Amino acid sequence: MVKPFIFQIVGYQNSGKTTFTTKLIETLTARELKIVTIKHHGHGGKPDSLLQKDSVKHLASGATASIVEGEGRLILQADNGHYSLEHQMELLEFFNPDVILIEGYKQGAYPKLLLLREGKDVSLLDKVSHLAVVGYWNEEIKDLVTAKLTVPIFPISDERLLSWISEYIQEQIHSN
Image (tube, rainbow, N blue to C red):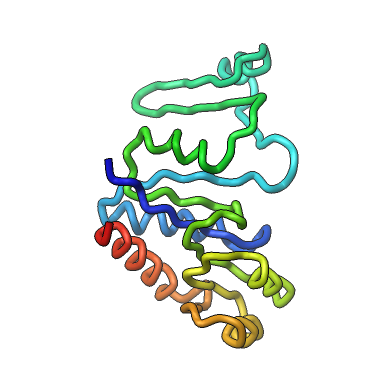
């Protein structure tokens, strides 16, 4: 089995990660690539689940994991364990994806898009490794990033950012 290509989208809360990730999924899917995603819930506590559903009742009763399937949709919920990024990726490999997109997990060791919304976010440049490209929200950030990095940088609203990443991912898939 060919390993999927792994790409991360990182940044602080409200930097545009989810919006950008959904656009990237749409673009890559239109190129006939099979995409799976992992989203880190970095806000503390457990992520919301669908209340009053049988699978949640199973978890509340002590089940470690619960799967619900219907009409081609499979929903997995798990509780009472630590699920490392690597374990999550192993689980998703069952679906034989071309790409695993990871939203969050800033410390992951995979190529990344870093989204910077405000000037103070530039501190992430010293904390995040494996940067492939940077998206920024205003010109002030552009100058700060240009002084520190040699990776491509684009305004977040520039379609070239999405295009560059899509091409980059496709090149990486075809070179494996």
